[in-house]
Length: 257
Image (cartoon, rainbow, N blue to C red; front, side, top):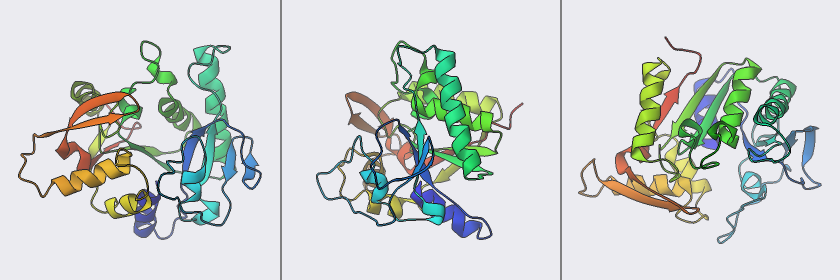
């Protein structure tokens, strides 16, 4: 999100480009500023990560990022997990949507680029295997963006780099978007790759920005464009073309036939 925000700001200098992350509900540290019940700002001082700290289940990753406009990075809280036992699917979606819409309204946001590394937001990934894929956090956020009524574009960077989608599943999802008239096109990640890999330099090689960095290094090898990269993350394994890992798909859900 940082890298995309930098590029967007450079291209649209008359705009104020904020950036943030959507995270699950948790107890927020005392030094985080509450904007709404489901929106927070991290402290003003940047706190770099140290090697070995993967920053899971915390806000340390966001705190390590450069500060931007209006206190970016913002933390958008998605209050309910998709497997909540005490709520129906419609209740989960309704309450998550209300939370994100309130946060968008509070910041007076008038357009959004929804950035996802890997594309589980497009395919459903491995969230709730055998259950309702629409209840995964990424899908819930996309539902909320539609409900908010702001223009938004879905940017899937390095399709498959999260190891959550097979080649066939990703191809089906992209074909569906294309046939619906929603696929805007494909773009290289060259401009954002340096920022992504720099900010992720202390993280393990299996983190998605570093997988993308490895794909760029692989471009100098003699392997063909059809060569596959096997990715294992969080118990999931997928083989994805190396060529996918250096591009992004832009999808506009407002378009279509």
